Image: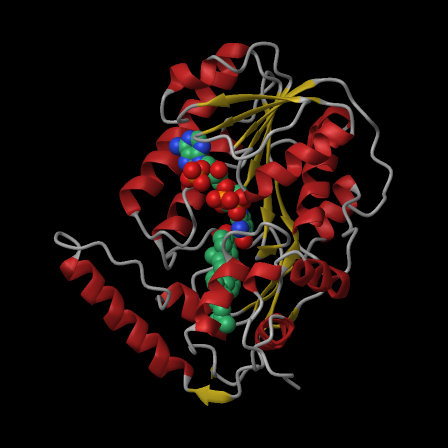
Amino acid sequence: MSVKAIKPDSKIVLVIGGSGFVGRHLVEKLCSLGYTVRVFDLRTTFEHEKVTFYNGDLCNKQDLLKCMDNVDTVFHCATPSPLSNNKKVFLRVNVDGTKNVLDACFEKGVKNLILTSSASVVYSGSNIEHGDETLPYAKRPLDCYTQTKIQQEKLVLSANSESLKTIALRPHGIFGPRDPHMLPTTARLAAAGKTKFIIGKGINKVDFTYIDNVVYAHVLAAQQLQQKPEIAGNAYNITNNEPILFWEFMSRLLKGLGYAAPKYHLPYYFIYFLAFLVQIFVFIVSPFKTIRPTLTTMTVALAGTHHYYSCEKAASEFNYSPVVKLEDAIERTLQSVPELHNKHAKKVK
Ligand SMILES: NC(=O)C1=CN([C@@H]2O[C@H](COP(=O)(O)OP(=O)(O)OC[C@H]3O[C@@H](n4cnc5c(N)ncnc54)[C@H](OP(=O)(O)O)[C@@H]3O)[C@@H](O)[C@H]2O)C=CC1
Ligand SMILES: CC(C)=CCC[C@@H](C)[C@H]1CC[C@H]2C3=C(CC[C@]12C)[C@@]1(C)CCC(=O)C[C@@H]1CC3
């Protein structure tokens, strides 16, 4: 991570979901800052000499209680894969599981809880330009992931109290080394020849946020929560503060991976309608077969509308500003995934 002074600390912190993409980067940063770190996750995906791992399901409170003794701050960044489209699992983990996390925090006297929420909690498919935290939650979220992230954030913020200070960070479109969603999905679609098309006019701006910036925001927020308790109970957008055309960003990734940039335009509403039909079909066959389509109304909307956010509030209330610029972030990310590069690439202009 780029250097910005963050003071070391020796408190015990717990990262729920610490084996995942965001969680593991956060764990590594916390360790380097001198925190005593515990990880709670379904699986252990890496080893670290300074980390104690607890495997368990956050839907089971007893599992959680086992790792919370003497914990000062909990970071909650566990989720089922956002692209998995399984309503039952989202409800169980993001809503019921989060209730367990809160109960366990209260029972064990944890002082601070930082939730990794999502800027998408205010997104229902219409343009959002420079959206700030005064925007209301999406009334009709486009998928069950977003619906349960809204419920989760409400639960966490309303639990804010004298004994447990809570905060929700809302990053958007996270990418970087070891990202399991954006890069692998893009590479998979490209390898299957499905990235030739631009949905809509291609002029919609979006925020994509580099993982180090997301991690930096989490560490800052945790530290500021202790020095400035008045920030508790709030949600904060976290982005790279460099909105970019969605299709420009995707083109950079694709070209960097050795694929051609998309160039043929398809009408937005036509594709949206197609995605809607796909969703109806998926619903009808769901009792017999589980299908997880990439083409959903949510992904089409994300690809064809403006959705970028203001981080003014995080900047003014806990001094957040991105530590890695988008240009560098894209470069570092592409270099980190040699296995996703097109093996048959000719020189693509
Ligand atoms: N990636 C993105 O672009 C964005 C992500 N976010 C938020 O950031 C957070 C982290 O996401 P990300 O790191 O990308 O996701 P990952 O899927 O990489 O990591 C989530 C981790 O949580 C674990 N987990 C899932 N269910 C449970 C459970 N029941 N008990 C314990 N652990 C569980 C997963 O295990 P397993 O892999 O075995 O399921 C995984 O290790 C989430 O809250 C997400 O909503 C917000 C905005 C954008
Ligand atoms: C070329 C092409 C169209 C590639 C597909 C890219 C998509 C896989 C990503 C584009 C925007 C991403 C995104 C998320 C997941 C991956 C994308 C759909 C989230 C839904 C992840 C979880 C969140 O909280 C919000 C994200 C918004 C952006």
